[in-house]
Picture (cartoon, rainbow, N blue to C red):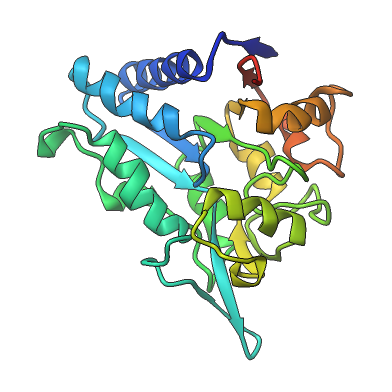
Length: 252
């Protein structure tokens, strides 16, 4: 299903209200989140609306999708969480900060409720998610030029779970826009740890792909042109999810 909104602010409000309604109805919500610009307005509205309606986020759990890793002598390690491009830093300084807007302590989401895959044991992440009952709502975004979703690129396999991946130049170039303090592509790490396409497709109860603004016109066209999964455009994994929607604005 494709749902169009008049603008990205209205989209964010609608999506935030949906998430909060689920949280109130079930008294818990496992939310899959990307660590970039596409869902920032939704995080903003989650914080504002939950404050206005006095909704506690203590039972909200966030499943983060990816993080940059470094490779030294065939050993992988996470980047410094203080790095300007770290997804761990983004989750703490952007997502958590926005969600906890004006909340008393007992209503806040805590660090323990924001989960990342373990670089030493990537496969464990899928078991962890499965044991939680899966991801209630998986928020997805697409790379503007290559359709990467999390760090999955055109070389990713449909049946892959959480894994370490070598990033393509297209993905690294797109992410220079997400983290503008990069001065050149040489500064962008060449590896990342990411949920796999199979993680997204099989462990999400519902998934929403958000594509807004002029920058995502091409991504919207590529994702929707055939209405099915295309392994050359990873974000089209949305069509393999049990319940899916594509949310967009006027793309201008």
